[in-house]
Length: 360
Image (cartoon, rainbow, N blue to C red; front, side, top):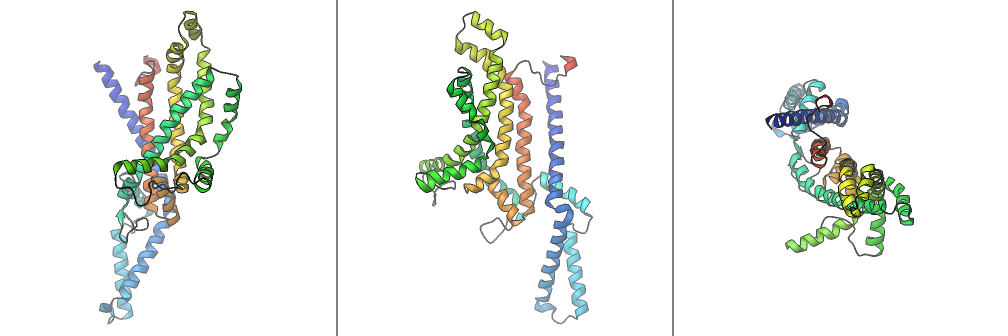
């Protein structure tokens, strides 16, 4: 038992370190791209020079200074601002500072993406927008998982029927992104029928009661959740149905049938259980794709999540928010991959964490 815990702890640590290294490399590349290889810092320098010059020339206290004294004061102030913000160092050194700030979400304040005249720390802007995205994506993914699982099992029992061929024939429709289906859903159910809201998270003004707020939230979630489910369900059903068909043709399944076990028992014990690891893998990879697609989907439905925040930040060239959003998505991806191995071990006893092929 002690050796097992030691091996598991070592594997967990190594896995976490490897994922963290991968995340750091990805974030560093994002920092380089978001700063255009240092060009954004040159723009920041120009902005500082402009602001300092306007401030000095507009201050009546400096009216008696000569032009040379005024210029020296401006130059000294500009250099001081450069030192305070680290802009006097080479970009390669500044980039590692940006990397540290990005990993810890210490990205300063955002002026552009605040509704009031003041500014707010980027980390709080991101954390404020993260829950709506998690609510929307988690709901869509849970519905997608159980709906696709039920449909795949149902079709695997009716292989070759008209219904099987019809649903599988719809698999290519999953090539279209969720936001495209969202546009059609908005047109039919919001613009033409008027039975569902166009977008947003809740009605304005928000309901005062908890029940009213929950009902409004659920109503506003119908269209975006439906768009995500429609965009992925048929291809997922096709993939999972194939898994079920492959495992249902194994010899041990035929032996179970010969023993007289019921179809439900065979399906649960000998078909569903061994297929769960690859199904979970494909589902989590699909979930990651949905996270990336949330940028456009949330913009289409005006959903106040982190995806829409990312789109707004790109439009306003708000580099700290762009980097912070990528870091948040990176953390979500790393956590998903980290727990994937443990899910494997829980579903399939043949998987032993921390054991190499030579030690099994």
